Image 1 (cartoon, rainbow, N blue to C red):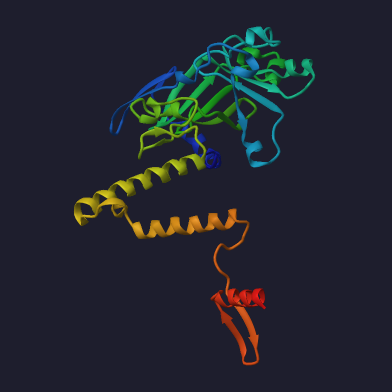
Image 2: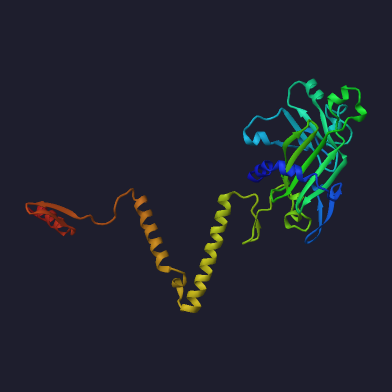
Amino acid sequence: MACSKVCLTLLPALLVMVLADDQTGKCTLTVQGSDGQENYDISILSKTSGDFFTDNWVAEENARLEGQFRSNYDYYINVCNDLVGVRDSVFKNKVKAGSSMLQVEQTDDPKAREDSLKSGGTYVKAELRSIHKADLRYVMEDGDPSTTCNNSGSSENCPGRTTTILMFCADVGYGAPIFAEEVSHLNYFFVWHTCAACELSDPIRQQCGPKPIDSCGLINIDTGGLSTGAVLSITFFVLFGFYLVVGVLYNRYVVGKTGWEQMPNFEFWSSCFGYAGSGCKYVFSGGRSSGTMPVYHIQAGGLEIDDDDSDLDEDAEDQLYT
């Protein structure tokens, strides 16, 4: 999330960069980098079927993340294909064929929603371009023209809307597009951190999926779905087991110890277990001591402590035979 905010902050500089010439492709891209040939393929993000409202990508908003005023639009996106389910939705007769980005007003009025529909570009007129290594831009052109231009009667000369998605390689899983800015009422800019933007030979791209890789290299297991507490617990037991094995081997073959004394720091651990046992006995006894308590006698010369209960036994015998 922090990285998203940084990239959005740098958006003006990125908008300048997209003007540079580079090699293009529909959903795949091959460029000659400083380290050799680089290959990219973002088709893994493409949706092929499903419901329009739930199965297309829905962009988050920069303003929503910053806690500032947010727009009243939702942005539905697909890459390398047209929006799924659109022909089965209530918008089937209102959306331009091949649209892969659609702006929809957030309102409960069905008529107002239909009137607000704006295609931001089509996948037929889309290109994947390279900014520099592991940073791509996916540009969709030929969207709906400006309403004002259309109403002026010169629709033939009206430019269509354009959507530009700045994609950055990151171990965040598929990620999701974030709406950044609308420029001149015709150009939409989004930022998308995703594993799909990584070069094909990158391990992140090779294991690209809905969730981050987040693998634990020490024990070579996938910890992406585990909580922080579970990861810490696994790490603790692995390190503790390593400590025991190495300690036992050292004490056995180097020092020459046998039996329980082979355990590393045997005196420390035996005292710990002794203290734990004493604590358990105290708790289960209800706080009563099982030992002999000292006897206190107050005399003229001061306080005398007698920790031997033999005097109590002698007093009891005297009273019995008197």
